[in-house]
Structures are given as structure tokens and as C-alpha cells.
Length: 117
Image 1 (cartoon, helix red, strand yellow):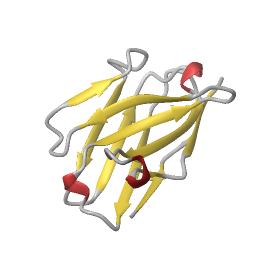
Image 2 (image 1 turned 90 degrees about the vertical axis):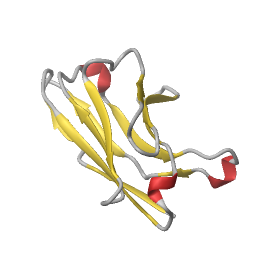
Image 3 (image 1 turned 120 degrees about the vertical axis):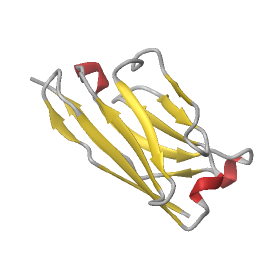
Image 4 (image 1 turned 60 degrees about the vertical axis):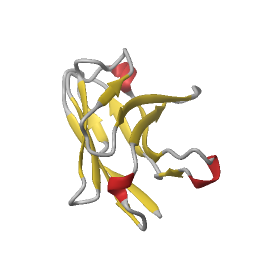
């Protein structure tokens, strides 16, 4: 299986971006999905999570009310809508297919988000 992120870029504080993660090679609708991020010099942080059917979501406190995770199972695509971006949101953003067996986890290659004036 494979995950490919897109949609990153440079944005001013207060701006918005929408990240996408296209899944292939596995049954996307069978898996919960996550967005993580990693800022320079820091560990990887769970940003948002969504259940298989999209009916339940969870967010890190730092992004609640600003970010929205969603999915379109017909398009095998995971999204992260990011509004009111702040400089501290600058990071590489990754989508992840979690699995009970870590060897069966999938990670995308990441997409850079930079928030700067």
C-alpha cells in the first residue's frame, strides 16, 4: 500500500491550506486514519484522527477549532483543512494508516507546511 500527501506550501499567519492524502494498494475504507506533523528538531505529533466511516474525529488541543479532518472513501482520500494557521503550525505533515502490528503501518512521504509573515 501507499499514501501520497499533497497540498502543502507557504502561507501567512491567519491563512488556510487543505492537505490531501491519496491512498492506494489497500482497502482505504477499512482503516481509521491519522494526520501527524513533525516540526524541525521535534518529535512527531498526532494532529487528528478519523474513524473508518468518518463518523468520529479527534484533535490535538493545539489545533482544535482550527483544523478539520475528513475523508472521502469513494476517492480513497484523506483531508486536513487547516484554518487560521499560526507560525507554530509550521511542520512536515504526514498521513498514517495505523495498524495493531507496527510493521503494517503505512506513512506518506510528508508535505511541508510553512506559516510565515
